Image 1 (cartoon, chains in turn red, orange):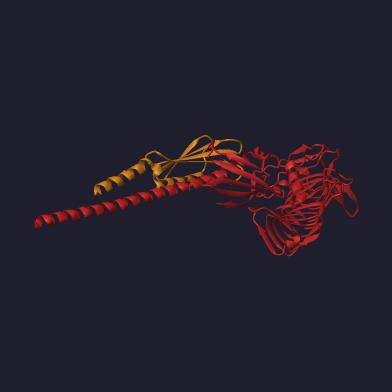
Image 2 (cartoon, one colour):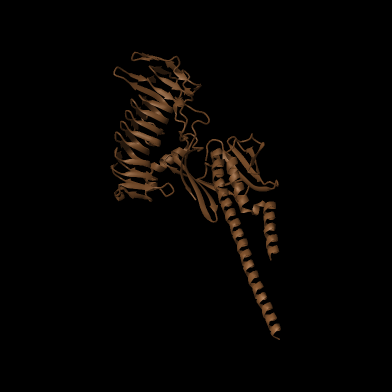
Length: 425
Length: 97
C-alpha cells in the first residue's frame, strides 16, 4: 500500500516536472520566434525606408532629366518604375528668382522630404559669353579687351580698334565660335517674369506680410521649410544692424537702404529704389523698380540676384560700385521703353561671376566671368563718348566658376542643385 | 524535446539558406552590398556586370532611359545562386543628387 502511494506520488511529480519543462521550453521557443519575427520586421522596415530614400533621389533625377515636362504645374506626382506604390511628389516654389524644389514620399503615413535650391547648369547645352542684337552696327574692341566663349554678334562683327591711344593687344577680340545674333535679345521666360511680378507686387503679399515695425529682434531666421516671412513698409527704411537668414523678405513702396552692418543670407529685398552701402557682404536677391545702386567694395556671394524691372516708361538705372564682386545673376526688364533705354553701369574693378541680362545700354568698366546679354555699349572717357566700344574689358565664359549654377532666364528650367536645404526624415 | 529543438533550429537555418529573404542578416547585408557596388565603376550601358563580394554575387544592370537618365538595377544572389535582394533607382547624369 505504501509503495503504491510513493509510486503514484513520484509519477505525479514527474508529470508536473515534465509539464514545467515543456512550459519553459515552449516559452523560450516562442520568445525566440517572436524575437526573430520582430527582427525580420525591423529589417524589412529599414529596407523599406532605404527604398523610400532611393525613391526621393530617383524622383528628383527624373525631374532634372526633363524639367520641361513639369513646368506647367507647381506640383507633380512622378510614378517610378511603372509601380503605383512608388510615387514621388515634386513641388516647385519660387524664392525670388530661385526655385525651391521639395520632393516628398510617404513612409508609413508620414512624409519624408528632401528640399533643394535649384537652378540651371550653365555648362550644359549652348553657352553664350556675349549676345548683342544686330542693329546693323559693329562692335569695336581696344586695349586688353578679351572675349572668350561663344558670341552672338551683329553681322558686322567685333572689329579691332584703337581708342584713347590703346590699340587692341591680341590678334582676335573674340576667341570662340561667332554666330549672327537676331534683331532682338532672347526674351525672358514667362516663368521668370511671373517670379519678378510676384516679388514686386506687394498687394499679393499683404495678407502674409508683417509691418517692418514688428521687426524688433536683431537676429531673425526663417527656414526654407517654413512659409516665407515678409516685412513690409509703405515708406523708406533701412536694413541696418540686423541678421536675417533664410526665407525672409523686405518690401517697401519707397527706398530701402541696406547698410554694411546688415547680415543678409538668402534674403529677398524688393522696393522702388534700393541703395546698398559700401562694404556690404551677403547673399541677397534685390528687386528694384526704378533704380538699384550698389556701393563700392561690396561682396555679393553666390547665389545673389540684382533685378531691375519696371512696366512703366520711366528711365531705370542700375550701378555696381567700384571693386565690388558679384556672384550670381543681374537682370533688367522694361517692356515699354522710355526715351532712354535702361542703363547699367559696371564700374572699374568690378568682377561679376555669373550672368548679366540687360536689354539696354551697358557702361562696362569691370569684368565678367560668365555671360553678358545687352543691347549696346557706352563708354565715357575724359576725352570723349564712345558707342559700342569695349576698352580693357574681360568677358570670359571659360572663367565661370565650375560650381556655378545659373538661373535659366529663357526657359526657366532647373537641372542643377544650388544647395541641399534640408532632408526631413 | 531536445530532438524537437534541434530539428527546429536546423530547419530554420536551412530555410534561411533556401529562402534568404526571411533572414534579416542576409537581407541587410545584401542591401549594404548594393551600397558598395553602386559606387563601383559602372558597366557599359545595357550590359550586366557582375561583382563577387563576401561570397555573394551582385549583378549591376544599367539601362539608358533618356539623354541624361539611367535606370540602374542591382540584384544580389547568395552562395546557392538564389536571388536575395533587388534594388532599382534612377540616376541623373548631370549632377549627384
